[in-house]
Length: 170
Image (tube, helix red, strand yellow):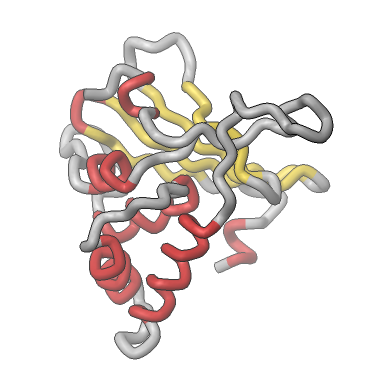
């Protein structure tokens, strides 16, 4: 699978239509020497796609709360073509989750998604727990905090949550 996702001759694009004409889009950017994953939202009324985050070894940009992630996962639009399977949608957008206070159902939901896409029932619960701990375990830094050592806030950090509201997705 990694050969397909990271083939420099292709840029895999995964579109996830959401109610209201919106689309969450994940693009594997396979430029030689500049590999990355871009996370975008589109809408027919917008003049261009809105990049919310990118991954180039580190995540930069906005992140999703568990509630926002599940809203996208559970509200596919049957009008547009794209990925409608909730398990696939969850796993494609999971890297954007950096919330520290997760729903009690998060581990069970992620475990079920991993099983749907082929993970062993024996391994899926531990894998889900590891993925959730990794997403919430990273240090969170509010970009408005200054460093007491250098007086700067350092490199840009992901902005946590509220992405859907900022984009007007209600």
